[in-house]
Amino acid sequence: MSDILGTQQQQTAQTEMAQTRLLVCSIGNPAPYLNTLHSAGHTVLNSLASTLSYPSFQKSKAYGNGLISEGSDFTLWQSSSLMNISGKGVAKAWQQFQKEGGTGNRCRLVVVHDELQLGLGQVKIKDGKMSPAGHNGLKSIRDMLGGQSYTRIGVGIGRPESREPNDVAAYVLRKMTSGEKTVIENSVGRVEMELRRMTQG
Image (cartoon, rainbow, N blue to C red; front, side, top):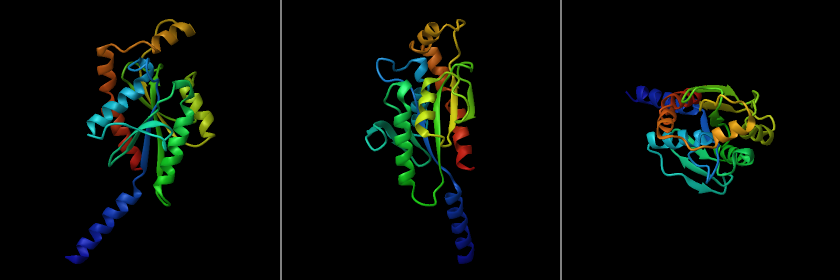
């Protein structure tokens, strides 16, 4: 019996060691642009923290002055800066996360962001090295990470018919309707599924 228990304990330890630790970051804008379509990433992370019964987000100087919520499965982090300069905070948070991870632990950076190219509430996974396609927050992250690998989770916000820059800016910076917010929050199940998949590989 002791041999069986010993084997089970070893298998459990090996499974835990094999799992990849995730720092899941959302980018958006602070007040007065809270709850806008451009901050859909924050909306999803708030919903994820609630779904997982994680503690409230707290400001952390060590993590680039962002807001952090740590749980047993993931470390969630929200940028507190403007979207266009969010890369500095993400890079600092990632550096701290790796530092705390210890030698031998596998870590992975994931960024959750709004995506104009997807229908409302749709979710798409991309390699962080792919083109930002005009998304200034992703450009900032690319520039600050200096080629480091990460994964993007785009959450669809749809797009206006007009492609004029001023019209697009007005669209992404407007407040979500209650219906839009519900649809975006409902994408959290797919996001959580993808995150759990990442911990295994």
